[in-house]
Amino acid sequence: MAEITQKISEEPNNNTLSMHPKKFALWLFIVSIVMIFAGLTSAYLVKQAEGGWLLFELPFIFYISSGIILVSSLTMHWAYLSAKKDNLAATKLAMSITVVLGFAFLVTQLMGWSDLVKMGIFFAGSQANAAGSFLYVFSGLHGLHLLSGIIFLIIILVAVFRYQIHAKSMVRMEMCATYWHFLDLLWIYLFVFLIVNS
Image 1 (spheres, rainbow, N blue to C red):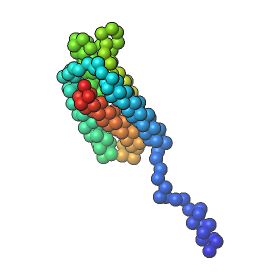
Image 2: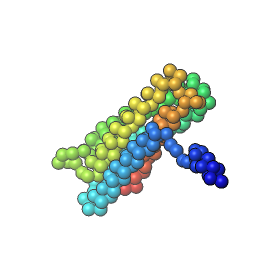
Image 3: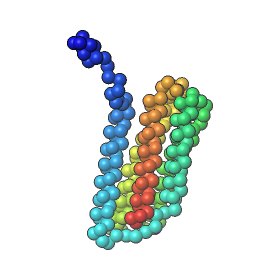
Image 4: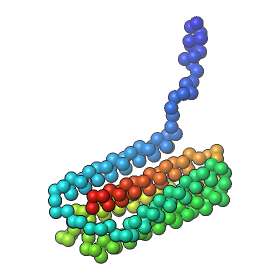
């Protein structure tokens, strides 16, 4: 009986939940980003409640950029599914389109800033208002994270061209897809938050 017990204890527990170390690190990074924006949106509501809040319509270009980032999520998912099926031609095309859409999003965000300036809404200075400043912070900070996402996309795209991404090597592709979808959802959350609370 003792021998049986010893053998059982020596056998590895295959039911133990595990996660790839790089994926775990990515999720920790995502959680830290969530905490940053949760703090910022909370600060926005507190500041708004103090009064003297500037009411203004969001530039229409932000609606366009939101559409662009939603489409980029679809092309990212297409790339992911294509890689799982070892359809590398489709993976290359989908990843390339996603990179282009990522840059298009950043360009439309900059155009949105230009429209804000034309509306007399500034980030800082005597004419600045907290409402406008928060919008610049939200979109700017998100833009920085999205730029890191684009760099990640390009790294994966290069790996696809080198045949390093395929059905049996999907960890980096899964991480890239997770991060990109997160950034997309984060912007949609911020955009809806601003519409509701502007």
